[in-house]
Length: 131
Length: 156
Image (cartoon, rainbow over all chains, first blue to last red; front, side):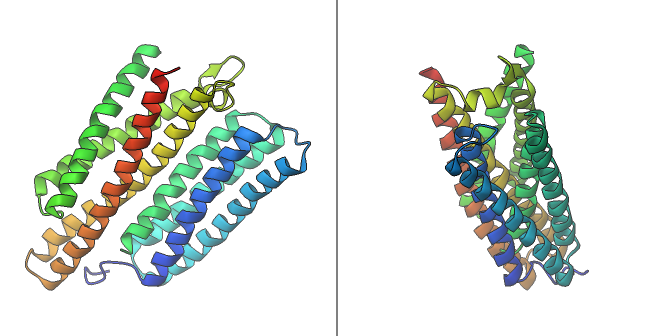
């Protein structure tokens, strides 16, 4: 790859922008779960908050896959590695979240938090790369 | 442990302030100053590394039968809850600014590679200008949230 291609395409900007936005909503839904939900869940609204968090996580994973596919098309190594790392961090966060939900051990939520910050870094870096 | 935490906190605050200063300068000089860029990158890296360490210490320290940060967010005291939330959101904005800073440093080195006066360099400089404005805005939001968190802590 030469230096002629300095930034990724508009499509990459939109996908990574949406991914960063979804991560932000996921973060606030996660904080709301932490503040408002009491495990094990007993109220419908508690389940709704957790469902929002999980739905956002699924959307984030979907857009991460789309980002990786687009990154492959862009042909820019940095973007490709960032998109790949993004998927890895989302995988770590998902594993941490599922382990936390399955065992209710708060230590697993640390993995979820680290995965989130890693994914936020990678997706926003892809977004900045397209600006 | 508290001494290590205090030292990390001081370094984080000091270099965080330098980072904001560097980002604002960068936005004002539109990414032209080489020294400002280096200063910006160094201060941001130190701030992020100390931030991750502080986050890990806060997260993993057991406190009254729970993790410290979970205990803080679930605390009955509203000030403690608000402070924890402000710190978390401020940290997320810091991560956003850091990723922008990394891309800026890559673009700056690319400008040197292609030559200051080439057409590509002009395009890169335009992009640097846009990113530096975004990074400065994210950092200002982050710092405001952190200062608010600090002020809330004073009233606990």
